[in-house]
Image (cartoon, rainbow, N blue to C red):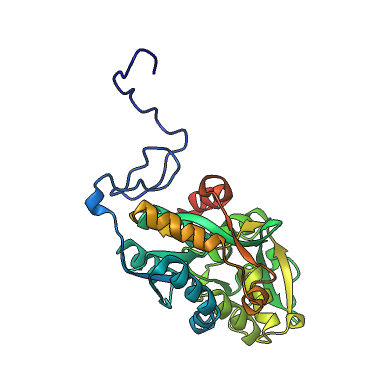
Length: 305
């Protein structure tokens, strides 16, 4: 300011208002919880605990992420503990309660983690070309008589969990645009996860399921399913993949060190294969990269099940 320091101007209201829990503030309008202003409230734990979204068998990811967890321990210089969680709700609650210091959240759960738990998304899996996305797909058995979403009115249709993007929010949003309205034409059955929905369709528990395309592909590559046993009736536009987020109340030096250690890690062959060729972590920006997801969550939150 010319002429010396004057009174601080009143903060302009945010163009887009954050949907944060009442215990958080967003002074800089980035839609993320502000870092505590009290230095004593900042955390600098000697042991860091993290978890990855439980989209499939938790044991698979505990083993898959071992090289990465070892890398972080060496890079950060602290003990790193991977904690398998059993549900997205449990993961978000653990983050909110301070039991997790960083985590990999599913696309839809990222929004809940930001708003309810103060998560700061900063990275996603990707390649030199950028972040890999995924689609909501509606799957039926290949031998079923259904050939359009409208054919499924009154049928048993699986969604995954309340907070899932492809497994719930996006399904509500897009299916209604194609003649199959949740709460009117069918009542979603929450299966508990994408793998459960896929196997449920195969086993005849559901006539159709809304699932994430990347989970479907991974299950086929691992031999858990045969893609030829299914037909895809609908595929949505592309969504961002799972995010990796830090707690908002970590000491800045620790937060920056963790980010640096994420970005200098190259996926080993097994990890890259499991994530369909992704070989690194790349930066993401919640404001822009999750804009479409936030819109869908906001528009479907009050829709009936």
